[in-house]
Image (tube, rainbow, N blue to C red; front, side, top):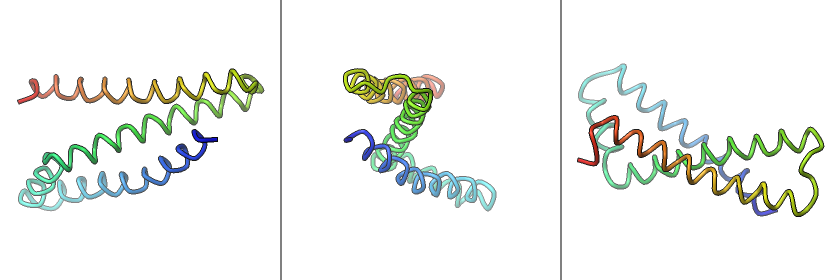
Length: 112
């Protein structure tokens, strides 16, 4: 039940995150000053925290969708199995988020 609620919340959060992506693309297509400002905002500690949350919401929602796809086949519906899949969804979303951010920082040349 909790994972179902979180799945719905992350789905709603993805609407907000998509607005951030749109703002970045609009800034990139409008002017260097606008793009610099958006990059500054996204690069601040608050911006990075929001982007980290967006990444986690995207990964969690994706894995939740895969969980539902598995359930649609009729598999994993037993209470114990469903609970294990729910915990795997949470753990997987955290691991994937961390891996994405680590890869992003490595691609940019480290934490500096």
